[in-house]
Every structure is written in structure tokens, then in C-alpha cells.
Image (cartoon, rainbow, N blue to C red; front, side):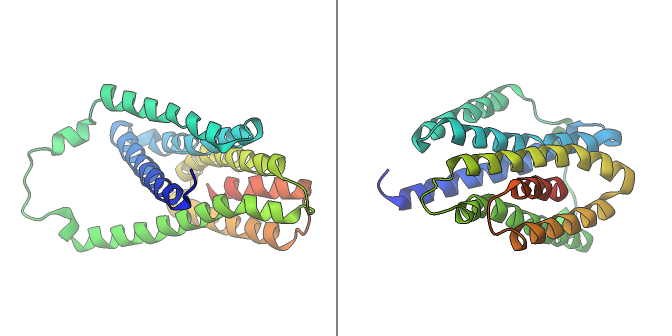
Length: 222
């Protein structure tokens, strides 16, 4: 691929797909899972995303050419097709079909307040999360001496991001069940911000502390 504009367009399309999957899988699980343990299973569901990051870091270590790594991306596409064919619609969605209401939920003031609050909170999380994922490998490369390729260091960092996400995703469900959404959300914001400042302001060279703090970013952020 010689034209980077083509790569940019393909990255945008893949981002649209990833964003849609993140949203739809969360909604689907929320509609089919019992309310009592729903936060726990949603926390476990969140593990699937960082698990993919761990695998991508491993792929970076194993395959020196990005073309080979991209072909592996066909596997989740095949799984998505199988899900589309075999998974039924949720009972909640089926019940909602054919119902008529005098006022649609989106016209409700309470609905709009919750909608915009959710957009702001989730948007802030996504911007910070994707900023870290996108720029951390480049930042790590900048800590290395001239002439070092840094492929191993970048791969390790991505794997640690994923491992931290797995731990944080599992813990988040139990924390929400114990402390509620607001306290857990505030705690993760404060924890992630603090670790980010420690990581980016206190490290001038690559070291073991860089790896430890990298994992803690996603643990607290999840």
C-alpha cells in the first residue's frame, strides 16, 4: 500500500466498526443478562477489548511485517459473521417492536440530560483511552537511544496495556456492585489521571517503572 490516504480511510472504517461493536455488545448483554449480576458480567465483557490489545502486542513481537499482522484481523471478522447468523435478537428488543407511544423517549427532558451526560463522560474516556493507545508506543520509542528499533519495547508496552485492561475490567464490575457507578467512575478518573502524570512526567529513559506504570494506567482507567 503506497498511498497513506488509503490506509487512513481503512483505519477510519475499522474504527467505525470497532466503535459499533463496543456499543452493541454492551447493549446486547445488558438486555439479556439478569440485573443482579449485570455489572459483573459487563466488567468481564470489557476484558475482551484489552485481551485483543495483549494479542496485538504479541503479534507485534512475532511478526516483523505489518502486512502479516493485518491478515490475522480476518479472524474476528469471521467470528462476527457467525454471531450475526446464530445469535438471536434479545427479548427486550423483540418486545419493543410494534409498540407505539405518544411521546418518544428522545423527546423527554430527562432522557436528553442522561444522553448528553453519557456522551460527555464516555467521550472523555474514549479520547483519553485512544490517545494513550495511539501515542504511548511513539513516546516509548522517544525514550530509546538513537539507532534502537524499539519493536520489542513497543510490543511489551501494548501487552501491558492489555493486561492492565483485563485486570481493571474484571475488578470494575465488582467495584460497581459494591460502591455504585458514581464513586467507581470518580475513583477510576482520579486514579488514571494520577498514574498518567507519574508516567509521563517522571520518566526520561526506558526502565521497569515505565512498564509498571503503563499497566497501572489501564487498571485504574477501567
